[in-house]
Image (cartoon, rainbow, N blue to C red; front, side):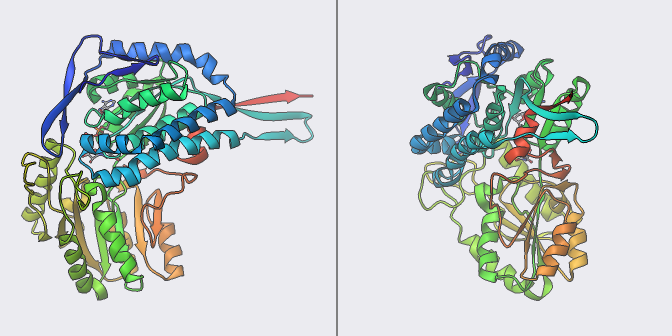
Length: 479
Ligand code: TXE
């Protein structure tokens, strides 16, 4: 199946008629093609967005809200179709796409459809100066949203929904590896009555189509989620043009387990935080640190649970771990398993590719647990972004805090303990944008979301996202 660009409410072939193969990770088969869009396609998307802006930015908040909530409802009504499409494109279990990805995409539209009606700005009376200041929060204009392959529609809409709610028009590009649900979203936007040109979706490679969005002189803000190296490159290109930037990048998140935690809850959640979505979530707790006194027990219980996870075809109901997203990504993850061996890490379980009958060319890998000798090794420092976690013991709070913070990333951290004082001390000192205590990936869309250090700049979520997608203008009136 060939997918098309969505420009000015219409589905269009790329101008130069160049196409990229789209693979199904569960069987390695090319099942369609996607536009290899050029600068000219991006320019057409920009022109459509620019033409739509004066009207959309003046559309009442109630009307914008109504349309966004309609999109949300239509996504919910098409849950099965979208979940199957996401799974086929990405390799994740259909059950996961159905429980997490598509409902969350719908929530993103509903949340920001509601949030915009509550978004307020300040006024300051300048006492004694007979003046009043008020702040206008105006949409930026045409903005760019670029998203990755791991949570395709979930992260695509996490950017688009606040951008649209705030009154911007959008040129968006999903990952070329997982373009399908973004394509289907176009149909839904038309059905929901989103005016033509308000949202434009161009497909293509990062280095050409994505680059054209970032380089476009009149696309004034870029919201990007993806790899840290790409984020650094985008920042370099955008800086001389003074674009607003929100960068949500990689992570290498610590999962810190103290002996006083609720053990069963911790164990079950740790299996999830390690391997959900084949470990391809920037929030996965990929470095597990366990207090010495329970280390041996944890090691044995955890490994037994991980061995029981079923690697299988994404459409099978009992599959826990589906296929990795692409052949190159599978190769990258396998390389890290080799690096672990070279560094004298011990593979406690997993480490091998899995062959599934009838789907022999799919990209399947066993969930892998590596015991490391020290926290400086490469598998403990570099983002692997696959079904691979490291474990090692620690002896005290100071030591684990130091190890937790000793990576270049700072996205999230998970802490398992029932000691309140320790929770407060550690939450204050962990270098991360998000700290989960006795839970993982529990999300409230009102909260600020993002990372520190090489995990990015800026915050998404709630009013933070609406602030990002608006310019504040101070008006000072003397009376
Ligand atoms: O990401 P890229 P990739 C990490 C993870 C993974 C690595 C690379 O470690 O192995 O990044 O993944 C677009 N100008 N994360 O290669 O390349 C690209 O087309 C503009 C973490 O998929 O960063 C895609 O739409 N855009 C991450 C998006 O950027 C460009 C999730 C992300 O692609 C571009 C995914 C350019 N020059 C991977 N180059 C997370 N934090 O969740 C690429 N793109």
